[in-house]
Length: 239
Ligand code: FES
Image 1 (tube, rainbow, N blue to C red):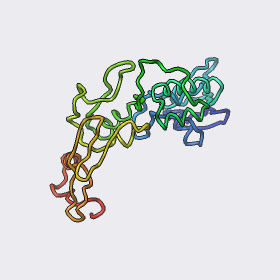
Image 2: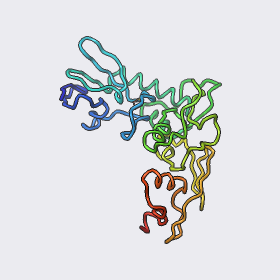
Image 3: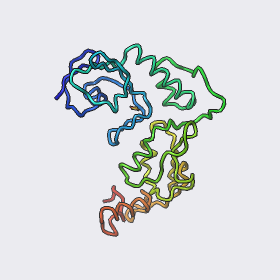
Image 4: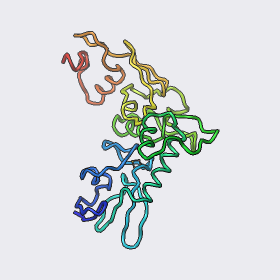
């Protein structure tokens, strides 16, 4: 165990815990966009920045990646952090000026409009946080998409911007996206994920007749867990 402070409150935690984990366990709010407890931290959005003082040195770090240490002094809302976080939100708002989530976060910091908007920057809902890519790789185990290109053209996509052949249609990317940038639609018998240009046939329940999950996703699970061929013939409700 190590002892340290967050906003001058003395706390104890395991050495390998991150500042963000400990802060949340103790009811201290730090905003995040690219963090999800089911995934490895990535440090993309920078919204979770905090000020840490170790000995005579004070610096800004991302709390989702930085582990607590003995004697560390952490500040989550110092004037320097507030000003830097505002700048990060201005940048996000310049890219995603119509996005509800980003607008609300910016508004909480008193920013209603970005003070700049480069002409070359097209409006986008994607903040390139990589959550969709990481969920696909680390939770689903498929890696159907990755982050492609560089700079302002960086985006999640399937290889060569073609339809995502390895996608199983589970929709994890859609559910985990913090800004609603991934567009998925369930029609009667099919699921479409527009971002990856893919369409899946949904499985029909033998009992209630409802279409309930992509056949490709169910086949993937059956193979992975060595389940009987008829395991998914009925939907979870009828089971
Ligand atoms: S939550 Fe830490 S960088 Fe995004």
